[in-house]
Image 1 (cartoon, rainbow, N blue to C red):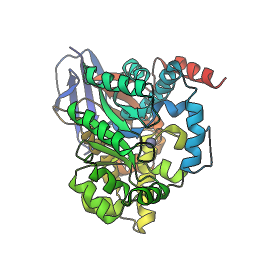
Image 2: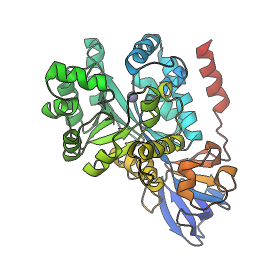
Image 3: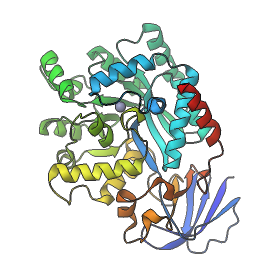
Image 4: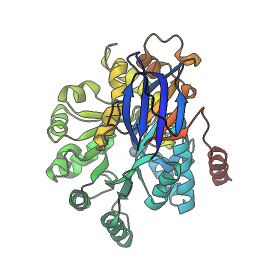
Length: 409
Ligand SMILES: [Zn+2]
């Protein structure tokens, strides 16, 4: 039995408790827990917060950080796709580990991935001890043999320890036909998996769709019957009020990726529209090649500031709300009972160093986390009741960085 006892830790509400973690769950949260545990952590001067769940990324693209800069989405993609064609299984494994290392150091314990060579991504996730929803990516250009192999992999995948789930990921409407979306939905639906896709990322995507199909991308996917509560739609920057109503009615989870949208000048996420429609909004970083960071702390800050400046309203997207996007909302989108510090929930949490300069003085912990926190304030990361980082030390760090650096040479 794996047990951790955290003594005298401060909760977000300011109260001080002991927390007993056993078998991957928060077992008990109370004053003075006297049980013995395998690991005891002193919580003095630390606050416990839920870990972050990155709802849309392309992990192995960490290898392409700062690779092709200053481009629009389409010309950036053309450059990146050429480079990606040269990546080996080993590159994807090393790139994914590099990304996960960065994620752990910035407090993220789950990521929803969309990439190629999913077996290498899965191997990296297992090696690092985090959770992931691994997308099996489809495009029309995929040869039929790989398509068949992907379908077979999905059918035979055994979700042994519940740390890794799969999603079926048709890349986008400009790379996948109607038939491809229908096929992807069919296999997702029959295997109880999410369907994860890019949607309405740029104005060009919407204009091309209207000229080809006579309807918007959201209307197209709705017509194909692929939108439901298991759909994860990344971006949704260029949507109309009636599109937002469709997404809300179908209970689609929308993932906002503010840094990537700003860097590629894709546009401004319609915060007010999505919120008013009642859509579950989650937060993601997108890949490190278009961000160029995987820090959810940074992503929360940009999301909140962008919502304020784009609505000309300083009350838009308060810290508490964007913090919920990065934790509970993202976890909910992927069916995890996680994202809060409460008995019975998955024991995924961060111990934050309240003596770190970026958090002093502690007038409001959530505001400080969203607007001020530096990654370095995250002292300890626990995922599924296991310590992944303590006192900012991750055992494999040197080796992971050395292997990733080799890729550039
Ligand atoms: Zn993306």
